[in-house]
Every structure is written in C-alpha cells, then in structure tokens.
View 1 (tube, rainbow, N blue to C red):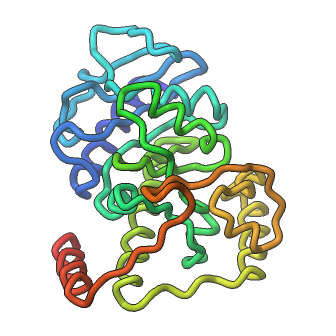
View 2: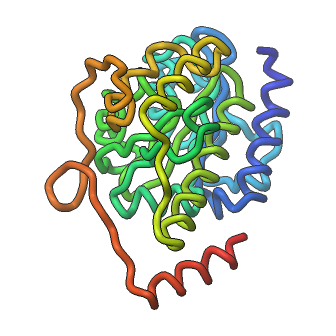
Length: 266
C-alpha cells in the first residue's frame, strides 16, 4: 500500500476508535503492513483521536525504527500477527467496553448466537493474561493467531486483524457488537444458541463466500466440534478457577444495574 494513503487511513481509524469509545486517553494502537518488511504504526503516548499523519512511526518487520517517531510499546503484538499470518496487512487493538468486560470477566465470545457473526468472524477466544508490552502477551497469543481473526486478552482488551485496515476495524466492531448483545441477552434471561446443523450450513456458506478460510474451522471454543466439523487444535480457555469455561450469574439488583449501565453506554 502507498504510505501516504496508509497514513490517512490510520488517522481515520484512530478517530473512529476514539469516537466510538473503543479507546480513551492513550489507549490502543493501529498498524498497516506496507510491504513484506515495512510497518506503519500509531505512536506511543498519543490519543488516537488526536493523531496527525506526520506523527506515525515507521518500522521494519522486526520493530527496528525507520523514522524518528517512537511506535507503540505494544507493536510486538502486531508484528507477531504479521509474521504468523501472511494474509494479514492491518491490526487494530483497543479496549471496547463490552468486549473488554468479557476479557476481564475471564470469558470468551464463543457462543453461536448470531448467524452473521458465525459467517463473518467466528468465535473470539480468550488468551491467558500477559503483561502488556512484554513477550508474555505475545506468547499467550501464539496458539490462537493462526486460527482466529480476533482475540480477547485477559484483563486487557481486544485485537482484530484483516487483509486491510477496514476489515480489521470491522472485525473489532463486530466483536464489540456481539459482546454487547450477549450481555443484554444474559440480562434478559439468556441467549438461544444456534443448532449444530445450522452452524455447519453457515460454515459452508462463509467458506464459499470467502468470509473465512477453512483454517478458521479449527476453533478453540468447541462450538464447531458440536457441529461435527473436524478440528485438531488442542487449547483450553483460561479462567480464574483453574481453566475451562466459566459460568456467571447475576442477582436481580445486579441485572438492573447492568441494564442501566448498558443504556448509558448506548
């Protein structure tokens, strides 16, 4: 991609993230792979809503600076994704409220409740906690990056990636919208999951349409296993009670408070 165009796009996406309340203050980071060895990324300690085209950092694929701007301290997350996924050319990391709420609660977005999400995103696993800006974070991501296009990071936030910057942003937006719907459905008594045969049909449709490739069948969450779709990835979700998926429940007062907060967030 042309560097000038990429600069404009990153600034535009940064403002969207800020305006949608997916980031505050200096939160989040965005990058675009310009070619096989060059990455344009958001700078450290800069609001994504107040970036300018000339403040962006340029590095090589190993993170070596190629201009006088300092890239985000979490650039290693982006570089890991680029190295593991040759098809990926853009990454968006943010702290969207509902998706991040799942992450801090120790929950993956892994229930087949929306056909559109099965078609375009698949399930979003929860990685183990790793200290931001260290290799703990990237090591926790490694088992999931090849098979998923968005991740939740325990007690941290969310990251989504795509063939271009708009696909990466759209996947992050879908993640957040799904987390919000799942939260509200829980408050209303629980969501009805799609039956296994319907999931099989949706997976077939999404592969024919090119939404997701066949490698996305290998899902850590397990709902595709129930649809009798082969998978050879063996990972489990972390939780505070020693692994596996967690169940959460609310009192009536907590549900009322949750709905009130949801209404305020819009």
